[in-house]
Length: 607
Image 1 (cartoon, one colour):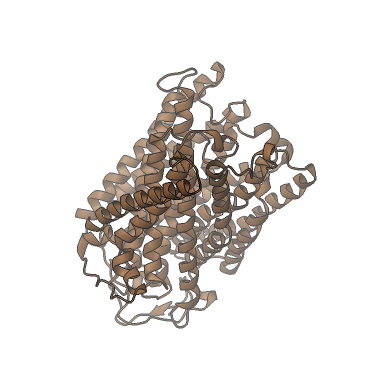
Image 2 (cartoon, one colour; image 1 turned 90 degrees about the vertical axis):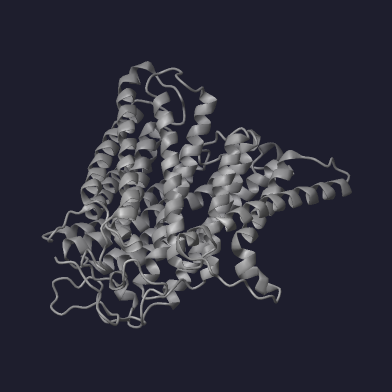
C-alpha cells in the first residue's frame, strides 16, 4: 500500500504545483489569479504526473533518465498487486480486479435507475439526479467494456499464448495500468462537483455549459484513452516481435488474433476520442468555439469526431469476447476451430469496416442526406465479416463432444446474445426505421445485447476459463453454473421487454414515461433486480475459491494452447525454456497432433 500512498501524496503535491503555476502565469498576463475550471484542468494534469511519479515511475524508471540508478524491485507476495510491478501477469490481475469492481459499482447505479423507473412519476430522485446517475452508469460501463478483456486477459494470457516471457515494454505496461485509478478518481470528483448529465456521449453544447463535473468527465475520458493507446502499442509490438519459434501467423490462437484486431483499432482511432475531449476542454476552459455556432463552430463536428472512434469502440469491446468465445468453444467441443482462416478474416474485416460506419449514429442529426444511404450500406455490410465469426462458432459446435462447463456456457451465451444484438442492429442501420426508433428504449436494449450480452458475457467466460491458471485454484462449478443461468435468464427478461418499450415510444435517458407503460417497466425493474442479485453468487464464488478453492493442475481443461503448458499460476518468466511451436493450436481428432514443446510435460486432469 505504500506506493499508493506515495502516489496520492504525489498527486496532491502535483495538483498544488499546477494550480500555483497557473495562478502566477495568469497574474503575469494581467488576469485574475483564480479561475476555477482552468485551475481544475491544469491541477489535474500536474496531479496525474505527480500520481504516476509517486506510485512508482520515479523509483523504478525515471531515476535512470537522470543518470541515477533505478530502485531495485523487491516487493513480493500480495503486495505486488498494489505496486508498480512490471510482470504482465500482475498487471493483468490489477486490470481485471479494478474493472470488475467498477463494473459492480456501475451495476449498483443501474439498480437505482430501475428503482426510479418502476412507476411513472417521481419516486426517490428528481430528473436532474437521475440524469447524473445515468451518465455515471453509462460512462463507467463503457470504460469497463473497452478496457476489461484487453487489459486483463490481453496482458495476462496473450504473452503466454505466444510463448513470450513478458510484454515487449514491461514498464510501459505498468504505466498504462496506473493511468486507470486517476480515471476512477476523476469520476468520483465529477460526482461531487455537480455531476454530469450528458450521458456517456457528452454532446456539446450541453457538456460545455453544465456544471464542473462535466469537465472531470472529459478529463477522465481523455485519461482512459491515453492508457488504451499505450496498451495497444505494447500488445502489437509483443505479438509481432516476441512469438515463439514456429508460431507463424497461421498458428496463432484465435484469441490472440482478436486482441491484435482490438489493439489495431485502439491504436489508430483512440486519439480521435482524445481529440474530441481536448476540444471540449478548450471550449470550456479557454473560450474557444469549436462547437459553438455563434463563434463559427459546429456541434455536429463533435459527433463526427466522437463516433469515428466510438463506433469502432463497440468492436474494441466485442472482438476480444469473440476471441474468448471461439477459444473456449473449440477446446470444450474437442474439435479444431471450424474455418479458422475465415474467422481470422472476419475479425480483420470487422476492424476495417468498423472505421467507415460511424455516421449511422447520426441519421437524425443535420448530416447531409447524401451520406445516409452510403452509411446505411456500410453498416449493413459489417454483418458479413461478423457472420464469418458466427459460422466458425456454429461449425465448431456441430457434432462436437461438448463439455458444458461454466466457461462453455458463457461462451455460448456470447454467441446467442450477440446474435440478437446484431439482428436488432440491422433495424437501426436502416434509415427510416432508425428515425422512428432513435433515442428510444429499443436502442437501449440493442446496445445492452451487444455490449453486455456479448462483451460482458465474454468477460465472464474468460474469468471462469482462466481462473485456474491465474489463481492456481478451481472455482465451484455448481455456483458457476448457477451464476450463468441466473444471469442469462435475468438478462433476457430485463432487456427483451425494452424492445417493446422502445417500439411503443419510451424515450431513453429520461426519468419518466407515459403511465400506460408502467406495467412493463415494473416487470423490467423487478427482473433487473433479479439480474443484479446474480453477481452476489459470482463475487462469493470468486473470493472463496481464490482463497480456499481446490488446487488446480496445470491443465484442468485438457486444452492444447501454450498457456496450459505451464504451471498454475505460471512462474515469473512463464516457461522454463523458450517453447517451440510445431503444430496447430486446435489439433483435436488428429493422431499425434501437438501444438508446442515446452520441456517437461505438465500434469493434466483426466478427460
